Image 1 (tube, rainbow, N blue to C red):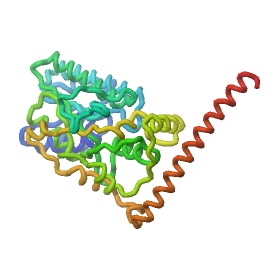
Image 2 (image 1 turned 120 degrees about the vertical axis):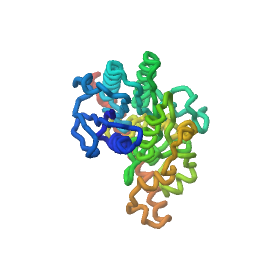
Image 3 (image 1 turned 30 degrees about the horizontal axis):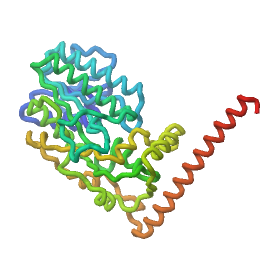
Image 4 (image 1 turned 90 degrees about the vertical axis):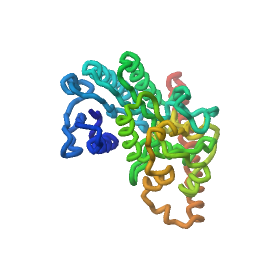
Length: 349
């Protein structure tokens, strides 16, 4: 059974499982109707409120991919809903005697810290940055899965921690937010980065099912993109370096004011490394079809800036960076004046 089967990841996983020789039957579950493959049965159900017992009956493996939250728009209500759904899915798995559960997490649960090793292995502790609630919620999902596994030692629990996911002609939610945080007014630091093509994530899920994986695996292509190589790929980008605290303060102001889609908690992930090792997954026979660089390239559709001469792009990047700084300063000054004006009115001045 695959939850979230109508999504970009779920639909790919369903198709691959349906083609796998060691899978007899696949049930696609989602709150919206889906026809992923002609030979796959689908069920429309609300995992947050609908009855799950009859749907889970007979399932040997549950691949839990359904999610109500997104990294680019962290919302406590959506993240709490994810936890509630995970609890219901695991409870239904207990009642049905499921033998394996596969849960999707993120490599962001390691956190972005100056002391992080390069790369991070699965033995590293979970330390998501506390002000990025989406990563904190993923760590809570992992905790629920691990607790379920401890209560069901006869079952296998696989937790996958992918890096930033991209698709053809689209950066994807997390990768887009990270890119937005690196341009304009950006925090000091140039860490290496990783990009994972969504098809490679789908194949990793299938490997976890086929190998009856019990434990945690990172999901990322071999190696990573160095800062210099990323600069060459992106070309001249508008960027002004400031201390991390200043970048986070400006990001918080712009986030609250609705000026930019960059949650302030994501800023550390653009200034400290959180690239991961894929050795454990490779040992199971998994190989990424796309390198980090290839994943980045296919996710970018060439735009007008890519067709400009390099010198012209550099000039434009400088102008945009200056405008961004001036705009941020004007916004801060306006906020201060508004606060002072409000205080004066309250005091009768």
